[in-house]
Amino acid sequence: MRSPFLRSFRIFFSALILICFFVVFADFRYFIPTKYINILLWLQFIPSILKFHDLGTIVTAGFAAILILTIISGRTYCSFLCPLGVAQDISSRIGGRIRRKFRRYGYKRPFTILRYVILVVTIVVSVFSGVYLLTLLDPYSIYGRTVTYFFKPVVIVINNFFTWVLGKFDNYSLHHVTVNGYNLFSYLIPAAFLLLFGLISLAKGRLYCNMICPVGTLLGLFSKVSLLRIKFDEEKCTKCGRCSVGCKSSCIDFLQQKVDVSRCVDCFNCIKICPDKALSYGFVRIKKKIHVTDTEKRKFVAGAIGMIFGLPDILNGQGNQIPVPQKQSTVPENRTLPVCPPGAGSIEDFNKDCIACSLCITACPNGVLKPALLQYGIMGIMQPVMDYHKSFCTFNCTRCTEVCPTYALRPLLPEAKKLTQLGKVNFIKDNCIVKTEKTTCGACSESCPTKAVYMIPYEGNLLIPETNVDICIGCGHCEFACPTKPYKAIFVDGNPVHLAAEKPDETETDVVSPVDFPF
Figure 1 (cartoon, rainbow, N blue to C red):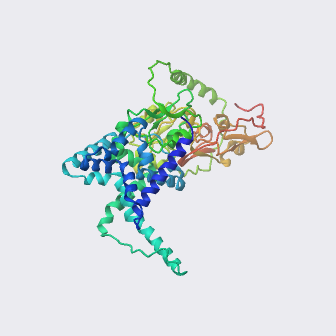
Figure 2 (cartoon, rainbow, N blue to C red):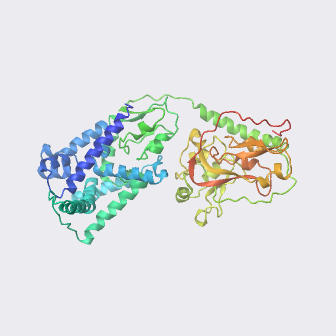
Figure 3 (spheres, rainbow, N blue to C red):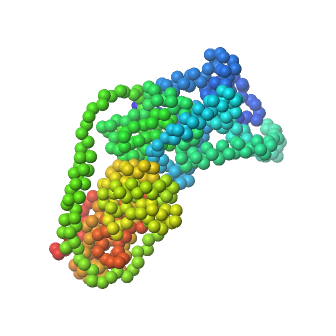
């Protein structure tokens, strides 16, 4: 099923559940009948288990229904029935509105050991020492405490305000309610968990559900054998990576076209966001493994061999054509930030995760990466940084993102990398030999793969570079090709957060190069 109705139904149903539980916990007039509350509680995992343990009747075994539901449909409980899970979705949505990068999740490896250690410890402690740890981490309990301690008093204050307003008009349909506080110590744990899941979900989506929550971990085990799940249509998928970026559970590895069903909460966001309609929700099919020759890998190997044996000759041949400056450039390159490798996402995230193992530096076929000195500051010494004076980042190469062991560089398909803007091009006209020496050049424009640098009429038959930062991806081709020394006439200034560049215009330029143009 690829219908957008799936996501719309999930949002409607989960919002209804969230509102129902909010009303239950914020009901200071106690007008909701107990039987309706019990219906809601029957579908809450931990309360149902504890009630079944006390009464031992099948009527109280709502947890069994949740397990069966999980085996059939995956972790739909976490998206449809868990009030804390729905609250986290709202928080992550708010985070996306505040800062756009919060919406870019991307695939992350699971915290497998941590998840199962918390689950095992919680079960052992609950069996031998009581259920305090269980209720401390139970999502239903966390949500209930949050509403009771922090939101119910707000509802009462609002009620008292309207009571006062209506009283001015002799309308006494509402009555004043006293706000009863608790011991200050009682607020510490609810406040700590409110901050914990609030901040985590604000920036990291469903990380709490897939790292700490014992209910989520347990249901994740059952979801591994679920009949219905999110699946890829390999023929339609172009590996654009949008599904991975939009997955709040960070469980979609679009490179391998796999979904970690133990972490997937069936929110159906990926189905909606996929432009190729390559994702669907349905019954899993067991496929026989068929050996397929990876032609892309063969092309890469052939290209690498060609580069090793042919690149020096090519560069030497060009060296005779590129004009040699007669004067030294005088205007320094005003760099504000270094350029960090593709897949980093941002300099801040990269500096946090990179262990400076130098594997990407070793693996880089073009040698553009070098160990940083103080480009990132003292804490970033030895972490890789782009050196465009030394080389350039090949347009369709993603080797560094494939070998990184810590996910400081996240996997990027060539299609995604070609639109990832590492930095922005800057042109220093006073350094350009077209102006300073009145000679024909154009090395920067000729080498630019996106034509973010192009030539425009200058004086007489001379052409001079012009830049378009919207389509620039910061690959450094232009900077490396520029012949001026010691300062380049064109350089790339790093982006603090990697951006999405616009697709280049395919139309031909109206400017015609002169006959003696050196390329």
